[in-house]
Image 1: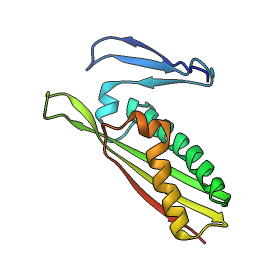
Image 2 (image 1 turned 90 degrees about the horizontal axis):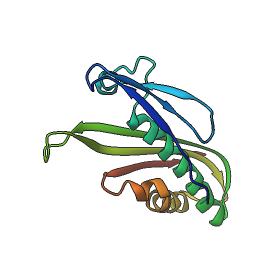
Image 3 (image 1 turned 90 degrees about the vertical axis):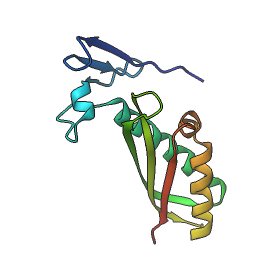
Length: 147
């Protein structure tokens, strides 16, 4: 399996500095980052490590879930997966930490019932590689089969 690479160039202090995150392997994009925008409610054109984790987690989960649904006999018409990654204070060391990840999935899938859909959704949450990498963060799941 390949290794993928991203690179960040940072200039200045935490409070006043900023950087650019480059998706090096794919060469698809470069994104601006700054701590003030990371900690603000409005991102204002900047991304954050949490948003990048959310993107990774939603994509990984969608792939794993589709594999498990297919193995259960399902035919996937559409999956809509959202990951909300929260940042908050870390009372143990005074810094910050990820305080939770909420996965929300809605699916149009034929060939499985609601129970099979829920079983595959939970199994995907446990077995997707990004979920495995984030075991120190509480991950919750809201999964619903739409008819």
